[in-house]
Image 1 (cartoon, each protein chain N blue to C red):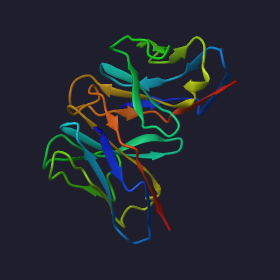
Image 2 (image 1 turned 135 degrees about the vertical axis):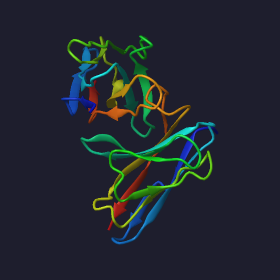
Image 3 (image 1 turned 90 degrees about the vertical axis):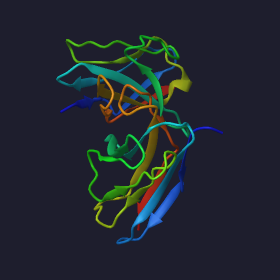
Length: 114
Length: 110
């Protein structure tokens, strides 16, 4: 089954804890993205990566970190520095970096801070 | 800076009625515009893009550079069209990121 997988589907975190959200794709896409989705605000870009071992900050990168050690994987860590981490997180990938290349989305992870 | 505005958070129409989801943008260069859709319990997916000039599931969207708009239209709404719709913009060419609007929830009533 091809596509993008995200795990877990639901994640609960205590304040002060770091958590890592998984994103894997088997589409052989070079570019990968992390978005945060909040009601009424659409999707906001957290980080993106064009190739392995390279990634760039998006519009709301503060309090987040990523790695891209393998082409297929782009995990997102939500650190304790993120002031309002409760949100729905979406991972996406595309053939190449940029809006002109159709982005394919994962099912999302809902993070709740207790 | 690029910005996308979808003025309606919720749009409710009856089955068979025409529907228009509004999208306005601001961008200084040559934009590429897209509509993404998220049906209930499904993933966000591309519906259409302005450069392809296609009609997908009966939906069309025309880029109006003079009014900086990219409204999504369908002459006869169906119940299965009920979903969350996002307008998105990027600059032309590789390396330009997508900017999404806040989204419009379309509800088609029987």
